[in-house]
Image (tube, rainbow, N blue to C red; front, side):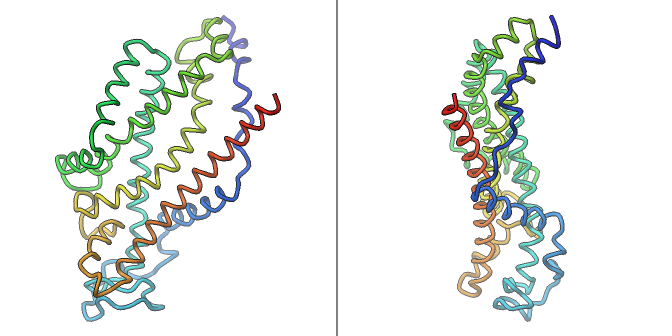
Length: 292
């Protein structure tokens, strides 16, 4: 078998790179970039302490000194939201990465191998799809012990089947293409075919889905922390901040509204970025189809 011959079968579509960013991708990218910088360097946005107590100034309204007001013990809500970005986004990112890696590996195996391996993986994913995901995640997180690590493990457990099914569907189509058939005829190993001739076609749709899922994971992380099975006090995680604010709705509107708006903005940013990237890919593929 000639290595050069197999290299020549490299799919040319992958070399064309990513499509030009559109307005949705740019807007989403700017929002996401803002939160990434906030997570990496929260001191650039706020110099207030997240632990300093000032009970005499509790539930203070928004002002130049306290942009989001203060909480029930006088802590600056804006500073806690800024510093909480690191915790919420890091957990959301970890969940999506773990789920995507597990789901991609199982999806590649299922779609390319077929037979009993495909049946086993798909029946296993069907079990997860038949269960109420949020309830399962809550139960697993409690069983593992309340905390951020348990929360990441629990949500990763219910998230990977989506990626497995997505990748399997793409692989079933890709493995019938001429360049894959040619590589098989030349005697390339399964691992090489998957790495060089299948995975490049999977990575772009997969990254688009993962980008959108980070936004959904932010909501899931905040939701489970809100009910007490995720981050624990005094961690300034977004869901935990909202949990502290729920008993203060009538005392301080800003304590509830602003952290909620931040969660909404982060989710919107990832959704716009993913939608923009996906739309660009679809338009480029449509243009190629017309060109043919």
